[in-house]
Image (cartoon, rainbow, N blue to C red; front, side, top):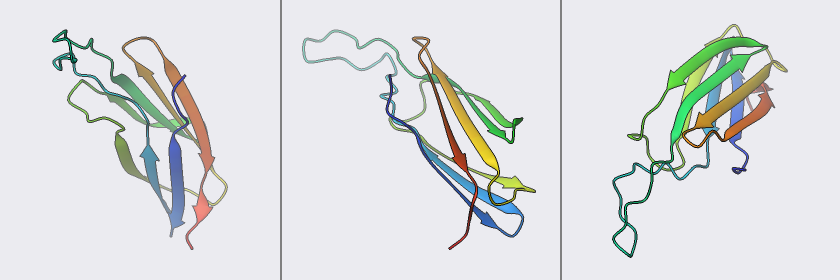
Length: 106
């Protein structure tokens, strides 16, 4: 199973500034290993973000995204303590879901 995502969500007014770091190798299928064999594709295909159970982002990705992708978004109408959930699914069928709460800006 992949490493946990780092999710930070801070409230600025009524907008939550959300930052997500996903640990994933994101192999394109074009790179070759030391033996000269092609490394098979292995990348995140779908990313979904929910705010209090309501989907606010549903993205389809390809192999063009870099290793350990970073995603930033802003959610209007958020409040301190609101629940955010981030889920990704990759080409091997692996899935990861992590949650965080919106925090007050410091």
